[in-house]
Amino acid sequence: MSENYERIAGDFNCKDIVSMNQFDLSDIEELVVEAEDMAEMVKDQGRDDILSDLVIANTFFEASTRTFFSMDAAAKRLGATTIPMQGIEDYSSVSKGETFEDTIRTIARYSDNIVLRHPVEGSAGKAASVSDVPIINAGDGKGEHPTQALLDVFTIEDELEQVDGLTVTMVGDLKNGRTVHSLAKLLGKHSDMRINYVSPPELALPSSIIDENLGYGVSQFETTDLDEVIRDTDVLYVTRIQKERFESAEEYEKHKGAYVVDADVMKKLGRDAIVMHPLPRTDEINPEIDSDPRSAYFRQVENGMYMRMAIFALINGRSISD
Ligand code: NCD
Image 1 (tube, rainbow, N blue to C red):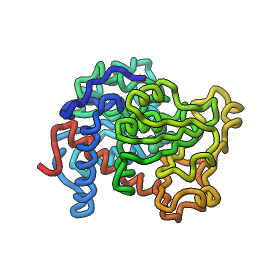
Image 2 (spheres, protein in one colour):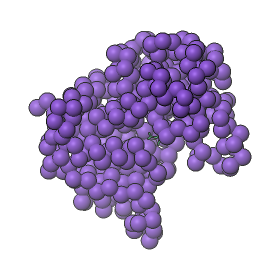
Image 3 (cartoon, rainbow, N blue to C red):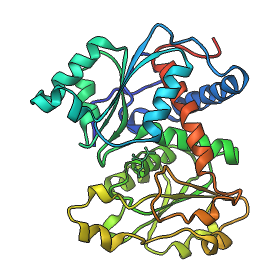
């Protein structure tokens, strides 16, 4: 995992956002409050100008829909100008053989923040070590996806009015899915949490993350059988089998369709529970459950923009409530 990061420790100004390891519970709460204010502001007036002096480079070396659009929309709703760049490996000097470090150093000379998605684990930390401007990790290979975890916890608070004391069940490809890596770390910082990890044995959550959470006193349970834990679940967090991270098509085919949440599964889930998914989904959530009020994944998408607005504000030393 990435290790080039500085703790937030109550001060977001000019900090990189690379790993959930940088955060204390109070930092997370500060962001959630700011995100709530952003949601209200957008509903009232659509946009604000608190970042109108800034240029934000949205630098994507890997496919994305939600993270790319929500980062761009978030920056623009706060008045920033953005440099949106997808397919950078084809359209930039990377294709001429420029090193990753030189590319980042260059973009840092033109912009005030760099949002970075990259297929290699650890690349956000590497970028942070050569950039003079804050790097926001928008997913580094099988590593982490901290802004997703932050929007996930914002969604849990928004939907269930609390995080402490809940039972969260993560299901799917917990080995390769970076969103669950960051989310497990983040939930571990809350009190009285129970986290169930449901996956095929080959796709289990990295033991380093489970061990870290042991230190925080989280109750954790691993199983291959969703049925074993579904009835006691408050948040069912479903993930995609990460096709692009497998060595071979056969390996992927072996696990494809391992878990499918459909109307039958929903019958076993509590009345007040919710279903979340970082999206995109493939076959692990049947669209027949989309109209179930407990299906929160499209509300989760919208929350992503508010949380990213909050992140942009705080790392630039601004706040909507100033
Ligand atoms: C996730 C990602 O890119 O890690 N998507 C997202 O950012 N919402 C999840 C995934 O691709 O499965």
